[in-house]
Length: 207
Image 1 (tube, one colour):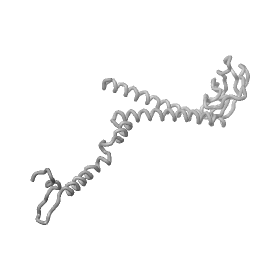
Image 2 (tube, one colour):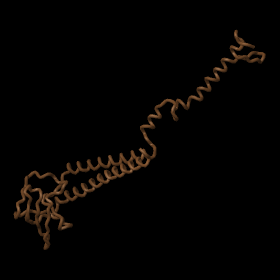
Image 3 (cartoon, rainbow, N blue to C red):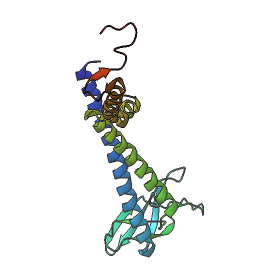
Image 4 (cartoon, helix red, strand yellow):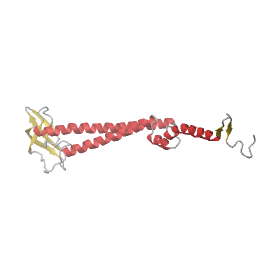
């Protein structure tokens, strides 16, 4: 694989991990915003409304309500961080209902107010996981681009004789000491000032 191909692959991985981080951040932001509205909806005022239509499965409901002199329509049954329906409510077209309307925005309403802290925590945990995976990938790629590869560095540090090994750095002094001791053992000084190498006058050696 050429350097250009490796660079393209690295840039593609950077983009992928960046998108993962953005997805995690967006999921966390959306969860916080939706859960805040869901909790606030518990104190919203309730007004009279009417069901306009309902799908056969009952998942999609359209209803209308009046906010003063203005009429509004909506389809939000509950916030997506809200608790799952437990009462099995069935909204029949033409039946009157109570609609919880935001005091700040008359066009924002919900039929079943409240939010689930368990679901909210689960979404936040998943978002945090995405951010962690994305940042870990970006940091790893940055280390590879900078030449800081922990695995190779640790392997080289564990090889005897590698640069930076404390044993290698201490060897020159040890070798010098051993060499001086060897020379001292081979040399013998006499009172007359002569210095002879040990073994120089041993049998078989010439003078």
